[in-house]
Image (cartoon, rainbow, N blue to C red; front, side):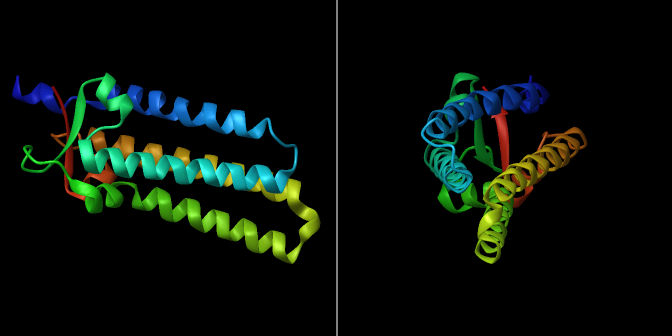
Length: 165
């Protein structure tokens, strides 16, 4: 039974879909409010900030997001008894947060230098975020496949492990 508690890939994947759906719906609803590319880019970033706060807060306080709660998995310290707290929950999401902020800053600088390029910048911003997401997912997936406890890159950064109950 011990080895099965670490087999969390599919549950983590499904939890990510549940959590992602919450924020996809939020972005969709916000995007209906405007056709302005610059405003949409800021709305996209605002949803990302909300998602980062959601993830860091819930992992830090409860060890799980809504998706993880539904699928009965939880993030623990390597001792597998204590939760990781807010600092290490931030470490879990830090790479994603840094890349998202860097991309957003690049988009802002590009807009400042060429205000007429708003639709191109919004499209570029979404493309870069999508590409980064795909690359990050692949890195996480590969890492999870090659270690006993199914730890992903962000688990190594936070010194955490996800366990199925």
